[in-house]
Length: 308
Image 1 (cartoon, one colour):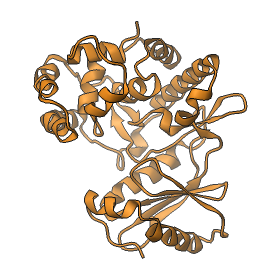
Image 2 (image 1 turned 120 degrees about the horizontal axis):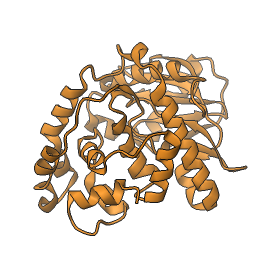
Image 3 (image 1 turned 90 degrees about the horizontal axis):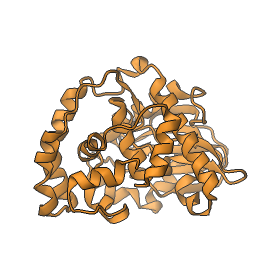
């Protein structure tokens, strides 16, 4: 039986324990009336997620992330059938045992775009970036008002201020060196983040990892993972685009903007939102993305978010 999990540290002890998780998922599936089918774990991400046969996916949320389960449930219901690419269909959601909650959804066809990317011909990569830009534009065009009660923050400015106050400490905990840490307060103070003209539904982690693709013709087949969705500044979603879709390649980012249908955001705005992002990890980005010509946040902004 799954234990009560109320902290991130407790979740770390449980999330990789297949001997504990698999029987619980099997029990949950039986309760949901699913005929026994092969069970396959998706290991990316911080939560237990399993494919149940070819048609279903079940995602488990511990007690302290109950609101995330509710958010994913509401957003999936709101989005289904409304974007250019499929999103999972919500089948059911609710409480399981010991504070755990679940979301049962349809399984998207295809394979993960991140894993497939190196095998994809350049022309098809370009087309997929265009399709991704069109998809994010469609997401941002939807009216987020029906989700306001379950998807926050209620005040975007207060969220930004809170993230700003914690930005240095967050990067210090991630292992960022002092030479970079000392630049953060000045950089953030130099970048005005005005209240957005309109708030939109944000995926918040729009990246290759959360897109699926059909290898037969290389077309996008889905967008998933809406538990961290928010309502806020459209620029916030372009952090994931620059870091994980175009991956610091100006030509691809320019193509994405063209498909999205807007001029590029100021790279400094996106660098500021990178530092303020809920899941920001600058040391990891510095290891994985193109190196800047100078070790400054200004140079990083142009290297990762410039369009040439």
